[in-house]
Amino acid sequence: MANYMIRGAVEPQEIFFRADNIDPAQLTMIRKGLRKLHTFEIMAVNIYKFQIAGASNDLNRLIIQAMANEMTHVQDYQIKLYEYGWSPSPLRWLFWLVGMFIGLFSRLRGEKSMLNAGIWTEQKAVTDYQKIINSAKWEPETLAVIQKNLSDEYHHIETLQKHLNA
Ligand SMILES: [Fe+2]
Ligand SMILES: [Fe+2]
Image (tube, rainbow, N blue to C red; front, side):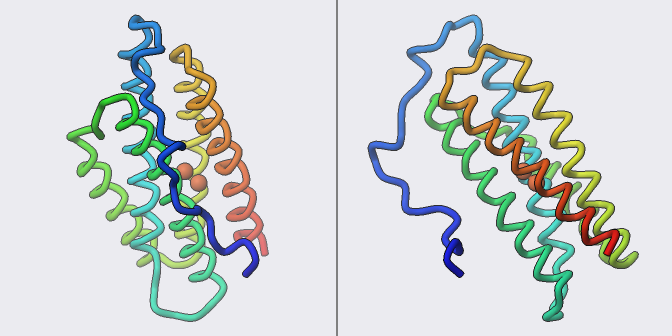
């Protein structure tokens, strides 16, 4: 349980207002990228959330863990959006719904289908992240967050694949 706390309390000095230091020509792409990342992660959280069943087994443990990890990604981009003075995409509920459906349907079809839905999501994340990283001139702190989360996504693919092949 040593690493159980995946996020400590946020301190005021950790919040930065970022929009003023950015080349205005980059702002549109940065906003688009952050909104996309935030919305995508909302979908990912829901896929796992709606896969969770009541059983106390390894599969459920894995899925709850996956949901919690994606929640930290949502948190990261939500904070960044507000630091820039923006807000999340008004269309994010659509992806919330898509996530719910993917989660529920894959759960109905059984363990293999659940794991495959997770792997599909994580692989889509990797592709999207790479595109978004290349789409704008990111300021170093925001870029570091995106890159850290991208490396999480690689790790998630590995974990899910290991379970699928076990
Ligand atoms: Fe994620
Ligand atoms: Fe992930």
